[in-house]
Image 1 (cartoon, one colour):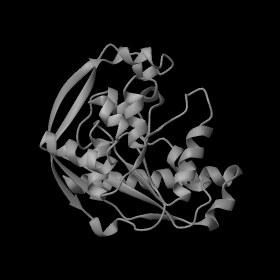
Image 2 (cartoon, rainbow, N blue to C red; image 1 turned 120 degrees about the vertical axis):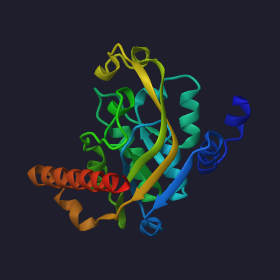
Image 3 (cartoon, rainbow, N blue to C red; image 1 turned 90 degrees about the vertical axis):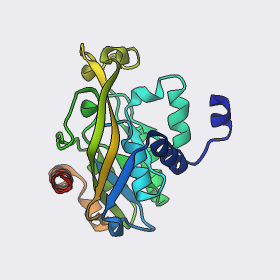
Length: 245
């Protein structure tokens, strides 16, 4: 089965839709009219479940190239899967993200859609509640302001589980086999697994990032741009999440 999958890879959107159908997940979507068309799009969302990528692709009805933890590119079979689905592993923590930023920028220049979960790996390895959201990392804002493309928008999206099953997969420390430098993996807990039965996707108002802003991406002014853009997205998604409940 794996040989056939890798030899004849299906469309990522169809994989996502089939995955949700197999699990029997009911999906409701608010704000479809806010989905941008024919422009480079950076989707930013909260993140609690391995289902989130499939949820967002199905809700936006488009393939999305998701940033993912670099260890996923080290795991046998998983690395093949994420390559076929067009996911983008981040560079190792002790290395600049030149490879990731280069690949993501080229996709945005071709008006593709990139997906980033700014909370990072923390909500995936620590139990969370459906209405919670962690502090955002700023990588997506750097990507938005570094990519020299016109008509780039950041689309904030909230994923709100209305009914879910919480269980576990394996000890978190097993992930140290693939990334011993990640402090989040040095935990005695089991890796949580969140499966959505019913989930609401609340799509926010797109945030345009114009070429006129990009010359200011240097020095102290850049830090203000990055901080403000990150805080705006965090506040937007937090509000969308609260509205969903």
